[in-house]
Amino acid sequence: MAFLLILSLLALAGLTVTLVGRRMRRGRQVRAFPELPTPTFKVVALGNSGSGKTVLLASLFYQFRARPGRPYYLDTDPSTRVWLGSLLSTVVDPTEPWPSATRRDGTRTYRFDCVTQVEEKPTTAFTIEYLDYAGEIFELLGAGDTALDNLVGEVTAADALIGVLDGRRVLQFLRGQAQGRAYLIAKIAVMVQLMARARCAIYLVISKWDLVHDFGEPAGADDRTRLEAVVDALMTVDHISDLVRSRTTVRLIPVSAVGSGFARLDESTGVVTKRPDGTFAPYNVDIPVAAIVPDLFTRVRQSMDSQVVGAIESEYRARRRHTPDEIVSEMGAFLLRPAGVALRATLDSVMSRPYSGEVVAMMLDWIARPSQRKDAELAAFRAEAHRQAYTLLEARTVVLDDFQRMLHRLEHDLPASVLSR
Image 1 (tube, rainbow, N blue to C red):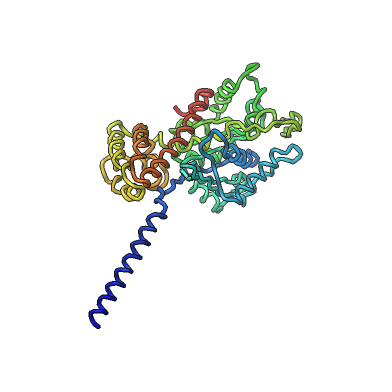
Image 2: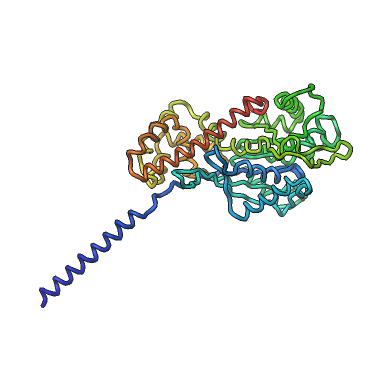
């Protein structure tokens, strides 16, 4: 009996091991490969009431929609998607009034995922955290107001700042009108002073660019000539010229959320109205967001000497042979090596907030991208987890390369847009 009992127990143990083994194998078969953590980049949008920040945001989201020929798009949560769509519908409809200015309690943070197609699977390459401050805050601040302290904290921790200048007021300034002078010299002073406290890239956006004409520029002047004249005028404003001289990266980007021919300025009343037969064709609205990551990574790259960059490329080529789990776990070890220490020192001097391993991993991939193409070709010979991880890294590079092309085109067409040299 004892012998039979032992045999039964052994058989039961064998069956248990077999079932567990099958479950583990089955688990390995259905287990999704571990995805790389998603980097997040923080941007703060500032502008006085009526500058057009919110309309610009709706138009920007529309420009980054999924469409043929673009391998990526911006996505957000369903409620935000519906709200921005409704806002854009109001903007485009010539029978509807322009959306009202965002009230102080309307300050809102949006999360936009940059989604790429990785082997026909939507994959988030990175996330933009977009904080849109209500312009009213600059006019209602008083003694003891904690909103200013909160705003300062957000600004100093940002990876990029977008400061929206009202194109209608800029036009008044160019024409020598008192309202324009008051706007640029006094009304935007708080905004410019706040931006001067940050270390990140600054994008001064001239909204309503379609209205900025007939201010004394040569007859038949194109955008290139007009922007050069605008820059010359803006640099006569002390706090703007001081800001430009004190920053590493400052761009001046003319944008129109609706495009030329959609709206017109009533010269007698100063009111902007919609043309009943206007065509909606946004201009440059995607540039400020497209510039954020390439400009940040470029600043880091330019702050390192060639030997450090070479060491980063060498170490990173070896690290790219790891699985996604290993890439994440190895990040801490990499940052303790000489090349990683040099990178950390550079990041500490460039970024205004604690940087995450996800941002560092994406930055390393961008710095070492000349070798990436070869690794991508070899990915097919690796395990599935390796192959899919490198496909995601390749997709991120495709996005950044497209962003970089957009910036090169802007600088070629409008060289005056680069204020800091």
